[in-house]
Amino acid sequence: MTQVSFCSEDVRRSFFSVIGQATVVLPTVSCGNVDQMMLDLLILNGLPSLQRIGSVYSSNLQCIIGGNAFGDDADARFVPTTSMDLYMLNQSLCLFQIRSQPKEGLAASFAHDLMALLQEWKVSNVILFSCADSTFYDISEVRETFAYYTTSSTVLKAVDESIPSIDIPHIHLEGTGLLATLRTLFDASNITYTIFIGFVTEGSNFNDAIRFIQCINAAFHFIPETIQIPSSWKRVDSWAGEEKIGRASCRERV
Image 1 (cartoon, rainbow, N blue to C red):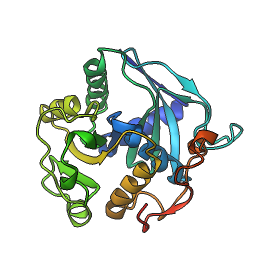
Image 2: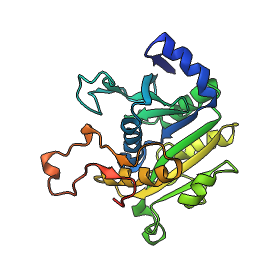
Image 3: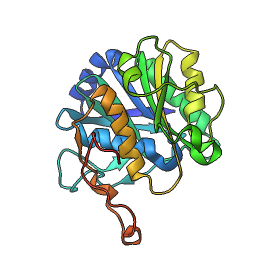
Image 4: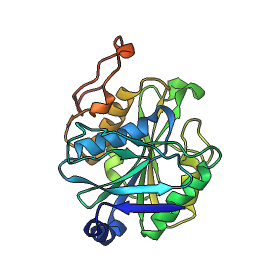
């Protein structure tokens, strides 16, 4: 069961007037939470054009609520985060930010929840962010290029020029979360999808998220070249010896 709560009735009406022509961006809740961190980068750096429009409840998703992920709690642009929040960028991109895991044994049911919403909203195009666990694969095959894509669309020239394609088999790739189930559901529908997939190792994956979004931004120019880092990524003392993160240019190799 899913329930959508919009910020206002005006927001709800505006959303349904454009969602059928918009592209939906979804994380697959995958290795290192890199895909979810990529959504945070899109959300923060999409301002001021981006707006939080509501939240989604699913009985198959663990319920959480947290503080402001992007700045001071007094910042009126943001509210406490929930398990699944909805954002809209320029009326052309709808971002699902999923911050928790499906309940044990209910991942497939949660994927079906998402699919039911997309079909109800008559969505025709979806972008999926996902990461596989590189420890299960021959790293020499993926070391040279970090990000890959596969698509059901016959025309994706912007990506062709920036990110190599990869033949992702219709099987479960280790660490990719909801990817296999969602792809199977999309293949059985009229929804066009593009999957961006990276290969990472579980750990401190902030820089993986930055590097991944740089690759995609080179093709689509979703956000400015200089990336702001969410305040919620602030390192704790135990990470003091790790590589520092901060403002990063999309032209840099992180």
